[in-house]
Length: 113
Length: 113
DNA sequence: TTCATATATTCTAATATTTGAATATATGAA
DNA sequence: TTCATATATTCAAATATTAGAATATATGAA
Image 1 (cartoon, helix red, strand yellow):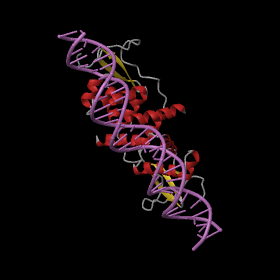
Image 2 (tube, helix red, strand yellow; image 1 turned 30 degrees about the horizontal axis):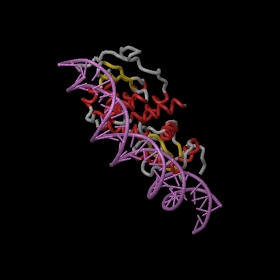
Image 3 (cartoon, chains in turn brown, blue, yellow, cyan; image 1 turned 180 degrees about the vertical axis):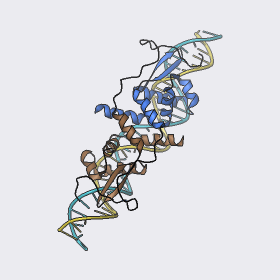
C-alpha cells in the first residue's frame, strides 16, 4: 500500500521525455554522462540534474571509471514501463453499452436516481 | 515518435494517487461520480477536476444516465500500466560488474579517457 | 414551476517542477 | 603542479500542477 504509493511517485518522477530517453538508453546497458549528452539535446547541467533526480529515487545508480560516471538501471519496474510505453495499442477499449449518438445508457451500479 | 511523446504526456497526467485510484476503480467497470467520491477522500470539485483532466486527454469517457455521469476507461494502455504498478518486483536489477565497495569498474563504451 | 441532487467550472493561492547560467569538484594527463 | 575534461551543485526565473472555495448548470421528482 505504501509501496503502491511510492511506485506512483516513481512514475511521476520518470514521466518526462528526457528522463524516459535516458532510461531507455540505459536499458541497453551502461552509459557514461557524456554519451548520454550526445544523444539528448539538452545542456550538460540539465542532464546531470535529471541523473541526480533518478539516482536519488533509486531508479538508477553508477560506478566510476576514472573521470567517467557509468550509469546503469537499477529498478526492474522501469523495464516493464519502457516496454508498455513503446507498445502498440488499439485506439480504444471496447466501451460499455450506451447509445453512440446521445451517449445515454443505464448505470449498472446500485445508486438510484 | 510523436505517439511516444504523447504517451509520456499521458503518463505524467496519470501519475497522481487520486487519478490512479480512479482509473483502478474504472478498470473494474463503469462508475458514476458519486460512487467515485465515496471511496476517494477528496472534495467533489476535486474529483470532477481529475475526471475532467483525464477525459480531455482521452483516457476516460462517460455516458449519461439521468443525472449520473457514468465514466469508463477508454485507453487500453492504462490497463497495462495499472498492472505493472501493482506487480511485485525484485528490489533491484542485477548490476554490471564493478567493485561493490569502491564502486569502480570499467566503462564498456568507446569513449577513451 | 420549484427543489434537491449530481456534477462541472472558474478563480486563486500554495506548491512543485523544469531549466539555464554560473560555479564547483574530481581526476588523469602533461 | 597545472591543465583540460567529466560531471555535479546551487541559484533563480519561468512555468505547471494541485486543491479548495464559490458558483454554475442540468436533470428528475414533487
